[in-house]
Image (cartoon, helix red, strand yellow):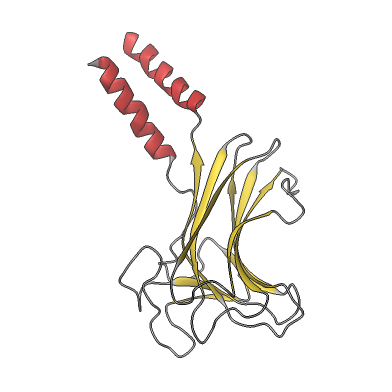
Length: 211
């Protein structure tokens, strides 16, 4: 019976560890609380003031179901988006996920992309996985419009990592003319507990039980 209880306890602790560590990842505050942003806004409408289609993992859609909308500045490599930085630990596997969409009447054109990025940084704020972080997944002008696309990926934090930034960005990659916007919703960043960490928690529990 004790072994079963131990297994269930460790399993429960793993579940707690698998919670997203981002603030306001679903944007239901109706604003950018927890995020830095540029050339972007939080909205529940399209350009004509109509309710958006069902947002992300929800099916309600429309007013009150907010999303993050990003656009560029019309220049090559011009961009807009949102970023959030949280504490991170070297050697930990982080899984980032989001849902992204572009819509009829505000679709991505030519070289426009909607990108989910991860940037690991050290204590001096230096990027550790490339000078601009890493593009995890994206939607493009060729992605089906008016439906949400799931974006996700997992990366291990490099040596010297103390923080990680999640970036949601619309970017123009050509000289133009480009246009449109990228919408993002239900963004999560989950640190995955390692097997050794779980065994350590189990061992600690056993020692306490024996006392």
